[in-house]
Length: 457
Image (tube, rainbow, N blue to C red; front, side, top):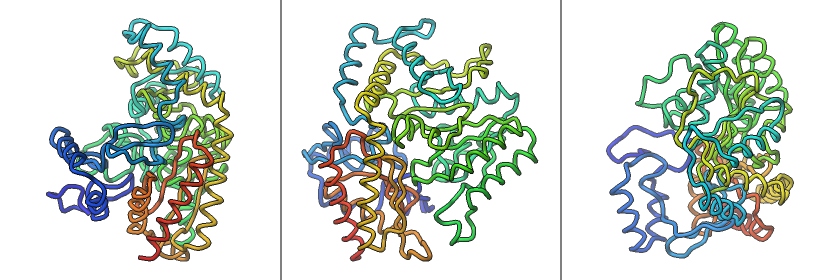
């Protein structure tokens, strides 16, 4: 399937639904009115076209709580949210904090600090595991990754990195160099030198396909590369891959920590989409008992209201005073810091870490009950309120059911549930941690109906 009607090259559909497909067109034909189509046409007229966004699927007029509202008044439970809506949309505490900050100090030039930015830095240092008590802010997660890469180079005097194929760490040139998604890398080289990739660990498919390493085999690839290169600055990965909801076992991360220490490389965790309660822990790495040297946050840090990201580092890595790691115009944004502080307080005050676990348990139970009746479901994986449903054509061969996954997505959209399809065949479900019991049960009903419709075909 081409992402551009003038380009006949196939596109690896790993990060989400592509702009153009038969299912997408059929959904639009059945659901969009003339006014929405006119707005989409105008959007396509003025925005540069790019995969996974413009042209867009639909248009929104509102967002509140767990729901998106389109311009025709239809509501969708949003289990996608670009991983930015842990506390839901428009949480009163976050909105009030932003409004109050706008009234007093809406912007802070770089040469000045401000109380709310310092408070946020202190809060993150207090919450973070280990010695991650030095912070830099940025306007987006990709920028936080860029700062982490620069800090690793300055701290180690090296420039090489090791990361996974099929990984995603942002869409800027440095981020796609360490990332492994073909959709982002193809045709834009040369990329950063020294970006070395190894096969990612796989638990679900390694025993069947024969060409996917087990988690511990994958760890030894990392050791092999570092041993033979001899001058690697850092290993970078998501401790739990957000898109396909996969994580190696505790033993893998403990071994990776040992390998990095043995070879003098830093361990960088990208928790941009999975930190701040998504997995049932404030930081996903806490699940494994392994602390990185650098940790990146973003997306949900701004409360689904304001773009905000952060890089947390060990205090002894404060060695780049002579260099500019970030130097962003909105580096200590008081409005972004206010939104982030309010978001963290909501997570703590409303017990959303425990709620994340509850949501994940209930979704997993419901989906496994559905899988008893629908053989399309090959696997259900959950880490708190991050749930992956892998669809297969056969549970023995585990061949991906990509066409069925796309069918399920648009069937669910027709019934009022939005989520992401990752890896071509994984339904990635990431609801707000504020989701109600009634909304959860409604989502399970929609998923069952959509899966049944896809199975019939």
